[in-house]
Amino acid sequence: MSFHPRRLFFVMIRVILGLLLIAWGVIGVIIPILPGGIWTILLGLGVLAIDIPFVKTLDDRLKAWVEKRFPRFYARIFLPVYLFKEKLVEKIRSWLDGEEG
Image (tube, rainbow, N blue to C red; front, top):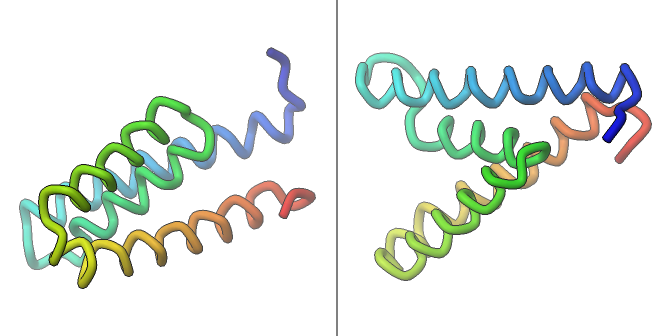
C-alpha cells in the first residue's frame, strides 16, 4: 500500500495527536487538577480510529459495552460526549487532509 507523501504526513500527525490526547487523558484521570480525563481519552481514540482499524473496532466495542452495561450513564453523559467527539474528529480529519472533507 503506497501513500502520497502528504497523506502519510497527515496520518503521522493524526497518530501522534491521538496518542498525545490519550496520554493527556490518562494523566488527567490520575492527577485531577489537570484538565482532561475520560473525554480526552475518547477523543484520542476517535482520532486514532481514523487511520487504525483496530482502534475503530475498540472504540465501537467500548461504546456498545457502555450502552449495555450502564444505560442511564450512556444516555445522559456518554452519548452526548461520544457524538461531540465524532463531530470534532471529522473536523480534525478535514483540517489535516485539506482536500478531503
